[in-house]
Image 1 (cartoon, rainbow, N blue to C red):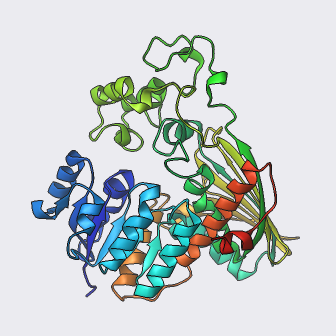
Image 2: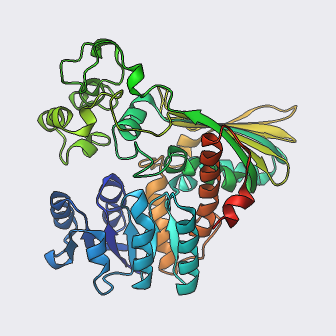
Length: 430
């Protein structure tokens, strides 16, 4: 019988409350939430009731919870980006192993420090790069390892952020300003950079990058635009970023279309028409996208030279209809086109017939980041309970930090006009 791992959950935002906590009901014999912390008392009460967490194990902040004697086997840290490392180090000192939401930190010295402390204290720290655990990318990894396309020489990848997701998270939302969170290439795309390293098995030598905030700034506001979408805006008829369109009437995201999950559950604990209208009228998600305090990019391209002479190009763009990823791997014996949005992988060895793999037929559960969320938690529970050894899928903090080096090198290059940045400089910088 597998050991039940007890969990202290720090942070009850969308990831903590709605992604990782439900694993306790999915794997009840393997995971039990015994302590929780958040600054929102309504969220604390709801999670406490749902998972039978006693009042004395409910806390008003992660810091308050960490200050107590050790309460659980492990801690899940799902707070805001710049809080992660300080909380993680104190938690490790209390004896916790950690599952920590990405990114580790926008500060290179903090990234190095958490590695140092984890090694010193012999703690397990796994970073939530959930896409590694998806059936889709597990299959891509299998094909690449098989050698069907030979050695990978060049890779072209794109993350289609989606126009409404860009507006929701990176213009109006929590990750809009790098001064309080992280550069977008780190916060959003360390997933992708980690994937590219893991899938190819390569190491980055140098980076160049270009990008900017092309659209979402005051000088681009259309004539008649108001400060809020509900403030008598005369431009809303032709504005795809109108908050009422995104949160009320959009087929994928609107409450009037029967949607109640993300992103609506960010606006209200229990989304309904009244609570969403109130949030749009009074909260940050009703602001005009041209009059927000955002500074992160809305598009960026990253070019990577790898140590073996191969190259990888990656594009992140907020101006897309779909919210998906597409990657083309070009090898010495063939190519792979991996279209995550369509759940299709096309493998074409040179001079041979194309093989099309429908990943939807390879698994049943594709919920939560294409099936990655629950598989990540399961792998972490197996690791900390001693059920299995770490394999190359497990995103240890040492593995994860390589994606952070690339992202922060890309940001350094971007703000310096595309200057070439050597990764050795990022790894060694103090």
